[in-house]
Length: 83
Image (cartoon, rainbow, N blue to C red; front, side, top):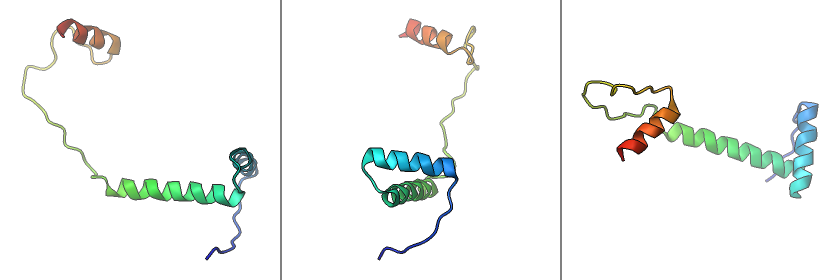
C-alpha cells in the first residue's frame, strides 16, 4: 500500500529529476522509487560479494628487461611482438 511522506530535496536536484522524469514520461514519484530501488539493489549485491579477491601469483625473476608497467602503449607493443 503506497504511503505518503515528505522528502526534502536540494532545489537544483529536484529540477533535474523533474526534467528527466518528464523526458522519460514518468511521474516524479516513479522516478524517485526507481532510483531508490536501484540504490538498494547495488547495496545488496555489494554485500553479497566477497570482501577480498585472491589473485594467483607466480614465482619468477620479476619483470622482463625493458618492461614499464606505467607505459600501457609500450606494454601493448611488447605483447603484440610476442604473440
